[in-house]
Image (cartoon, rainbow, N blue to C red; front, side):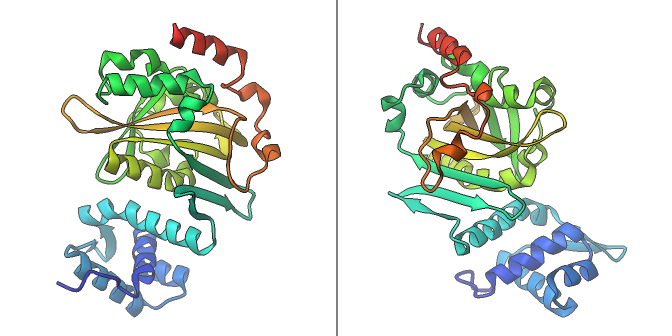
Length: 300
């Protein structure tokens, strides 16, 4: 087996792999990458040798991904995206905590600042405080009755071999109230890239989700981005606090809990308050009358 460490062609290998996985056509991949058939074939052969498994098979002169190829495709795409973001100075760490500041030429943007969990205790949001307490009381078991006070605000995911899959959407969650009841009802069982927001948001979710899958702990982020709205609405600004909870099902398999609260009370390095407040005020969950009533119910 070939040496696995620090391969100098890593990103070129990944570009060939992800492009061929997308097109399943060698000629199209060569044109997309401005490369040669020999180079793409060589890159795939090197990757297969390094990983010790076949990524593609050819059936009737058509490329098809193997199970191994499908299972590692999402991670390969994530590595490429994170590498490109790092080279463009879009990601980094501030005070040891993760930060993203990304703006595309087409106007789409994504800003994230990770915050210490202790900021939840010094903040004013009762839902987030209650979520941490419920998580601790339930010992992370997502079906435990201790989660019941926040279950309507909770979204739950689990990791399949290829992607993160939505397994539950609370009727009062930010997701349900932002996208509407049809998406709330039809999102169960869908992979994250198939949810509203698509692949662009799936890439940004990868690092936080994988961190929680590894630590089985908690993570607190402030986020501003653009998301499609409702059934046919275009992208609109959204600003929110997000608490991720490392949970587990009764069989001890991993579950990811997510509580999102739309808010103007965000601190994100490099992002002005004016941009944060570009989300319409009627979309606020924190500070809005409905949210205050919900917080009273949770505290009771």
